[in-house]
Image (cartoon, one colour):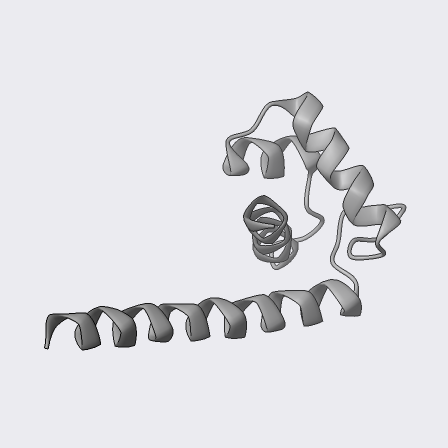
Length: 87
């Protein structure tokens, strides 16, 4: 799940400057091109990135928002749990 989030974030960032290029996204994510291709295929199947060019769909943007919320919640719970154990 983390790698999908990383890929979507890089695509979103790269799209701010024009079209996101697959090779540049793959390099910024620091994964092999074979793995990157499989991940992109999976993201396309789930309709999180567009089929033709490399950009995030509205569904992909929503996933990024939801993932950020969940990650923040888990961080809060971890901190709360750790502070309770220290008392």
